[in-house]
Length: 112
Length: 115
Image 1 (spheres, rainbow over the protein chains, first blue to last red):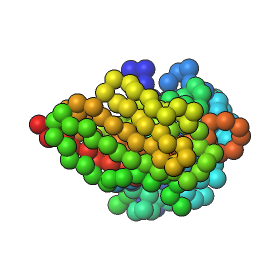
Image 2: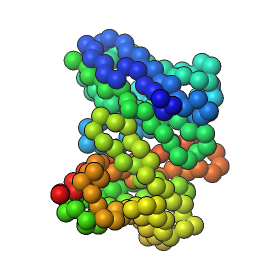
Image 3: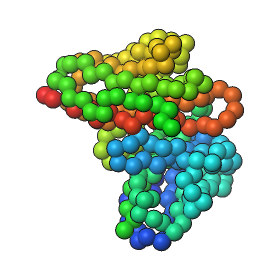
Image 4: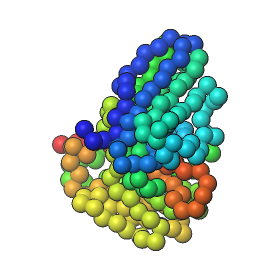
């Protein structure tokens, strides 16, 4: 599969726990994006990387959210001290230019 | 502030009909307008996109109409099929110059094509 890969597909956690999601973009893509999608809504932009540089992080929902892309390849999104309101689908996407964004299937997070 | 407003929220069309989904935007700096299709449990997939220097674009059964002065664009699906039943999102972004990147999405339209 040469598409955007996300792991895990589903994550159930208890409130207050930390969670980390991984995204592997399409190999030749230098841009990587994280979005959050809640039920009945469109994806909401969180942050993006060009290679290993995080160029936009002001839209991360709180300081409990952080993302890394240490070698310009895969990326991780971490949520610390999860809250029930963090329950959502977390989507990763990648592209080579600023168009034609390709999405993964997402990680569905449920915070109990 | 919702920068991209999408309507209707849901739509039911008979097979072979032409569903039309509309979007309006506020930010005149937007210069790229894609439409995405999403099936349950999957991420959004790019269908078709347009830039504001073109008033219409067709790809297969999908057509985007763009009205720059009205800041509106719409998706038409010709000869709709039950397999087109999905949620459709319009989006917009600024692709030139610096500043924040990332697509701004509408809230989506849940489309059902009845056999």
